[in-house]
Image 1 (tube, rainbow, N blue to C red):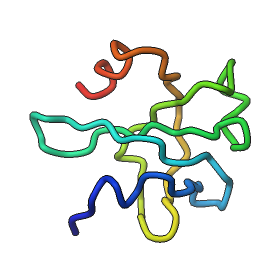
Image 2: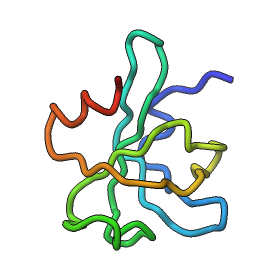
Image 3: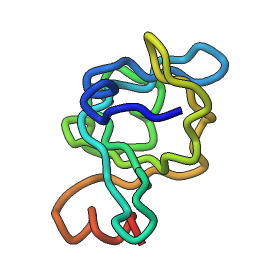
Image 4: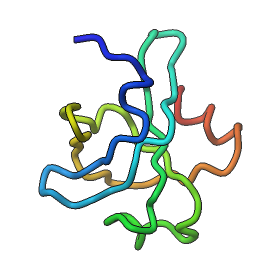
Length: 96
């Protein structure tokens, strides 16, 4: 099933156990595979991952392969680790 990136922006993200993670802020594209490789998550300060992130005002990047379903919300598996998005360099590291 094909979806537009603009259709997932702003959607709330929850884990499979109904824990709020944040909101989809942006998507990271892997141009070699022509696919989404990660999602940038905002509103982390209100989500279940705030303990893992030192500065909750920052956005985090989660691998797209954790996403299990997209509908009115985004469902995902809980991540084993979190990457804090701090620069364009960090953004390019996750998409390789």
